Length: 177
Ligand SMILES: *[C@@H]1O[C@H](CO)[C@@H](O)[C@H](O)[C@H]1NC(C)=O
Ligand SMILES: *[C@@H]1O[C@H](CO)[C@@H](O)[C@H](O)[C@H]1NC(C)=O
Ligand SMILES: *[C@@H]1O[C@H](CO)[C@@H](O)[C@H](O)[C@H]1NC(C)=O
Ligand SMILES: *[C@@H]1O[C@H](CO)[C@@H](O)[C@H](O)[C@H]1NC(C)=O
Image 1 (cartoon, rainbow, N blue to C red):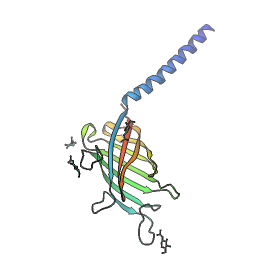
Image 2 (tube, helix red, strand yellow):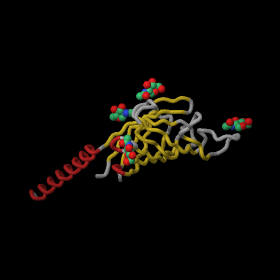
Image 3 (cartoon, rainbow, N blue to C red):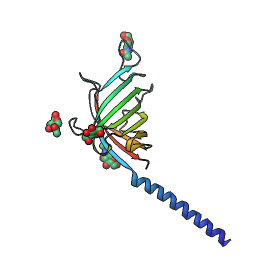
């Protein structure tokens, strides 16, 4: 009886210890990256262009259900467009909601071009309800230092001028070591 109790106690301690150590290890290895994305579908030199969508009265409405954009957006260190270029967000976004809450399907890559992550990339796949203050999207993987990474991105609109937006991104990644 005493023996069983001791074993049980040991088991509880071991489980508790291993859970703590795994979460602690993950916390220690968590990488946080912050940058600003410049999404400029407007103007003479757009960084995001519509490539498909339903025609409504002869045009493809920007927020029309089914509209798909391809983007190559600059990622900078601060909201100023001429601040340090961190990387580029390249990929697709699609207007994927028919209801009252406009929402995008984001399938994009962040390709880093400076600093310690130069040459590495992250892949994002998720839903982006663009008028919510904070939008969370999963990081589903990466390359280079981000191989087998998991994490999440928090997006918050910093400013908006007509259709052009500057979005603050806060990305938390647990790399695989
Ligand atoms: C398309 O044109 C029709 C007829 O002019 C109009 O009633 C409708 O509101 C227009 N739709 C949009 C989305 O602009
Ligand atoms: C960036 O551009 C802004 C306005 O266009 C300017 O005021 C600022 O000095 C520029 N910063 C750098 C580092 O070039
Ligand atoms: C990033 O890496 C590329 C390829 O290795 C290199 O050519 C470039 O100079 C690096 N850029 C920075 C800012 O370190
Ligand atoms: C990112 O998250 C950190 C920690 O929660 C916070 O201090 C920072 O202001 C956030 N940055 C942006 C651009 O939202």
